[in-house]
Image (cartoon, rainbow, N blue to C red; front, top):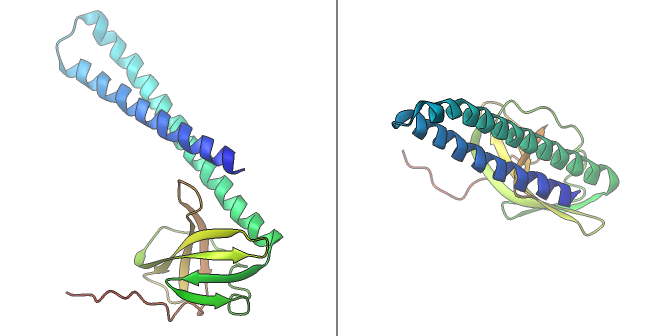
Length: 172
């Protein structure tokens, strides 16, 4: 699974870069003086660029869905032994029921974000980022940081993360 995610990620980045290059070349040919037969190739380059960028988008969406399903499978197949978020340790009893009900995310409303990791029984560790939702109390967004691309796993509602604070002092 991890190999497929890495391949999709690499293919997505490569096709995006090549698509952007084709797009820039097409616009450069359109702006500069070229003979009429070269001007006709501009539309072909734009089609190729659009296709490559669409393929890149599909690769990233597929990779994010694979990461999300991999995270869900890890939660279903193994018990969480502990977690550490922003330097605060959570035991298995502290996390009981926290990662059971994921809801859809409407976006990343970043008020505070904390890094950490979840440890499982099978010695697997998944790095995560927990983002405190700005507009709703006790709502947190969980993001998997296990692979090159980040994937929103979902929102959880819990009061167990309320005492996690950033150490930075806000100045206005």
